[in-house]
Amino acid sequence: MSFGLFGIFYGHGGDGAAKAVSKILLENLGYILSHPETKERVQSCSDASDVLRYAFTLTEDAIDHQYEGCTGTALLIWFDQNKDCFAQCANLGDSACVMSVNGKTIDMTEDHRVASATERARIARTGQPLKIIYLFTVWFCRYTLIK
Image (tube, helix red, strand yellow):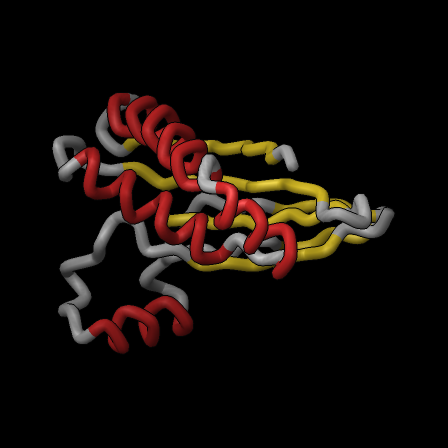
């Protein structure tokens, strides 16, 4: 089974964080998906949430906050054993992904903006003060594409 990854990253205070994250995230996803049991679980469950979440967490650990930070969106695409196409997206910050399927637009992400009631509630649930926001908190949305 093959996977495709598309990503857009925007560094705060320069492009260093975006360049580092784009490279490291790809390496981390490759590492995670190199395990046959992980690939099989994604294919059989049609869900890569845990894979994307883990890849973003490993990436955050790898950059160790040596940069000011960045926003980013990663879109993972794969086919299951029936040749059905799946796309799952993870984002951080106010970086977004919108797909068009048969002329219908589909929001694949939700921005992480403090102005959003949903985001303020999510931050409150972490118990962290609003001024401390971890870089790689990820929202997920999955959409099964029509053949």
